[in-house]
Image 1 (cartoon, rainbow, N blue to C red):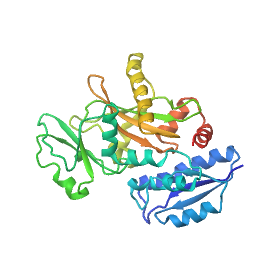
Image 2 (cartoon, rainbow, N blue to C red):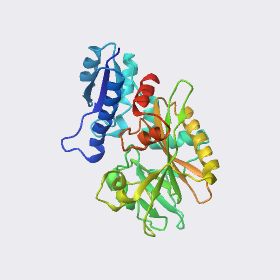
Image 3 (spheres, one colour):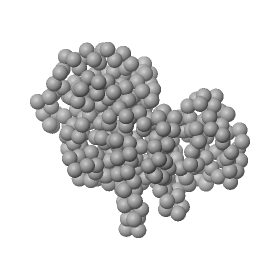
Image 4 (tube, rainbow, N blue to C red):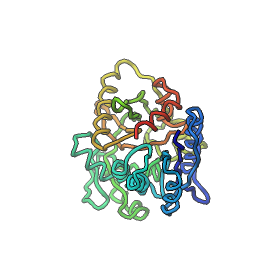
Length: 320
């Protein structure tokens, strides 16, 4: 039986809530591995990749279970880990390096979506000429971060606010992009690889309850990580849909399959959508190797689809 080396990003000295969450993922995976009778151990990694090479060289028959979400607190470097494993011909779970690179470099992901006719909101890089429509709303996002890092209400602005971008240039330089804000519903669809191809798990919708008029209905950092906030308490997930949503859900599922193919996804992923007032869907982003902690959308979609998490761990190990 192969030993599983669980790869985890080394935490900072004072880790934030989104950093600490990786430990919940580790514990869930370890429980599944115990039930599958795999031996396992944790390996914390950073940009000192020589240490990781030495570790894996001592476990030539191992399997790396990739839970690395950042390196030195940079989400844009996560593709380093599968790239290294590929160069060593070492088995690793989850998505390959090209998929992680493309999905974490958000402007590149947008370009690929457009080239493959995957619907996504109109967007501009930070360095592009930008002449906003004063009657539309827009949203600013960092180019290389996940987990809603850097996202709050001020990221959504009216096209009539001509000075709205200055603070983002000051904060991120040119490492952000702008997209049209889609006023409507938000969906997360989790996708699991398997021997017969990708399987889209039970779709979830994010509900924004009790949001006052004028407050952006977005899943920002507070909604994900700060339990003391209004956003956290009033941003909830549902798997319940009326029959009238069946056509829309089928379309979202079909787009997930497009994304899986276009981005060379493997193992597991999550596709985030907004759907406008005319029921037109737009892909916001593709999360390769999304969070799989017990309170995550992926974990709960798997349970809703009739799987135990141990079965999910087995599928992730097998689909590599």
